[in-house]
Each structure stands twice: as structure tokens, then as C-alpha cells.
Image (cartoon, rainbow, N blue to C red; front, side, top):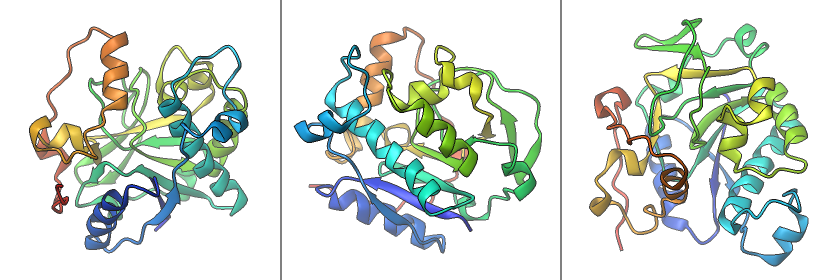
Length: 244
């Protein structure tokens, strides 16, 4: 099994406990990757955000956190790693996904989570689980809640992220981004992970989960209707998250 990195702010202890509980229940050992606080003035000074890009502090922290995960893959000379945000639930077969080395050698990113709307996909090229397929991602699907990043992909994204001016999920997964066309990106269908806001009604979300940064941004920029997720496709055995 490849390394699993969970991006988690120091103050969000309940989120980390939630991620540990569900992944350990599947026999997996996640590694906590401290998230970057984009509201820290020192972070903004060090960040690679382009001077002409007025990105919100939350987006800066999100990008820098993901970039630290890519750097970890390169620094530790890993063939790849799963990268998860800490508001994600994963499918019961998450730990049994078959990702052969020859496939990873020609792949940069495998997108594992679901988005608000389906994108365009190419023909199936591999079956990582009995009920799932991997297809090339041919359209915009802007979410970065859960994906697998290969060493090759990490090196590419570190180059593309030197002076960024887009949110991290837009840079990776949107047709408007130059990086999108440089990346060999696959999507698992049906999705093997989902952010909590897709799984529970808004009123049932724990306060610290229901921040919705990506949701607010996408609703502001795109009038397309939000699709209703098929929970049966996610196949989640979800542990309880403590509510305050």
C-alpha cells in the first residue's frame, strides 16, 4: 500500500481523529501532514502566489498545504502517495485499489473523489476494483479532496506551482489551466471518496466540517446545477464525527 497523507490543521483535532478512525478501520495507516495556515502573514510572504493574484488566504493555505504533500513525495523519493483533505470519507474498498506500477509510470494524477458535476471522460483503461474503472479525465472537475499523486506528477506540480494564481484544484483539474494539459490525469469511476458535504445534509454536518470554501467559490463562478451524489456508489462505512 502506498503512503496516505492527510492534510490537517493543528487546531482541527476532531478532523484528524475522524480520518484516523475511518482509515484505520480499513487497515490503513494515515500520516498526518500539518496544513498551512494561509492567514499567517509569514505564510503569505513565503507563498508562491503570483503578485497579481488576489487569492483569499484560505485558498493560499490550501495550495501551500497540497504543495507540501507534493514536496514530501519528491523529498522522500516515493513512487507516489494518496493525498486527502481531512473532510473526506472513503469507500470500503479504498485500501484494495489496484494501481499497477506500469500504469503509474505513465500517469501523473488519479482523481479519486467526486465533484459537484460529472466531467468528460475517456475510455476505460484499467479496472482498479471489481466495480470501478479508471478513465482519462477530459473535462473540468475542480475538487482536490482525494487523489493519488505519482512522483512524476509531484515534480510537474511543483514546477507549475512556483508562481500560481489559481486555486489548487483549478490549477490541476480545470480546462482553463495550462497545467491541466501537461498532466496525465485519470479519474476513478464511480468515485472512491467524497467530501462530507456530499454525504450528509448540511444541517447534519459538524460545525468544523461545514466550512464549504470550495463550494462557495464554485457557486459564485459557475451557474451549473449541483448534482445529487449517489451514495450507493461511494459505499462508505462512515464513523461518527463528534459534534460540538
